[in-house]
Length: 294
Image (cartoon, rainbow, N blue to C red):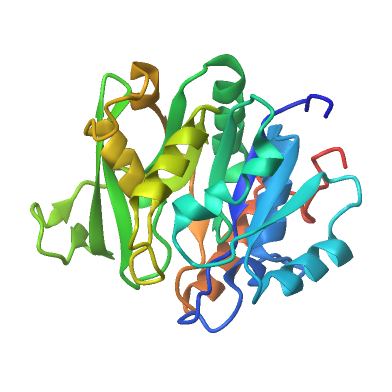
């Protein structure tokens, strides 16, 4: 296959989202009813990704395929990977392997979050110029939508490298700051704490690590998923001793840009208002793919 002009982006859209009551990647957030997935893919192409690989499941996948066929420009390079069973995000990424194995780094994002062209552009630049794993770190106060509690991975960063990720649950914004209502300390969280929103960049040799993780997870199931943050934590803690030392380093690219997404049904109106404001301020085109050259 001819080389691509930029890295591939794997978009994880295989989640069932039964509590949401619909297909979250297709939630209408644009001013013309465009879906989260539409705006996210448009941002990615504008940022310089050459190919989009969307991981879907057999249940909601056909609806997503039809939506893309009917709304996206025909010259957007897109592939579909099927995750047969809901075994977690590591397994979901692995299902996209056949479309990304060209000896090139690749990135991974959620299908129900919008990271913006700046953060995605930083990712492309890093993957092209620096052969290391990476994570974009968003400020906590720039990564919350609405008032419902969410889970956020708080990152410890040392000398620009990821040292650890701690999952904090039931994180909420209050008048006086931010709190996590779980069993961990401290309960109060800093507004400028860097959090992971699952915008990852990986070197191609990480495919072997993903495969090892799934092979070792004999009891992986819908109730015992193998998740990317947990795998990264295992790598950082040296649980894969045979790895090249370079694979154990994750550069953290901090950003002040906003990451917005649809986690709860009540988030929809808030996100719609945010997108309309971004368009009004000139940060986003009125229609997806207008700035991507497609």
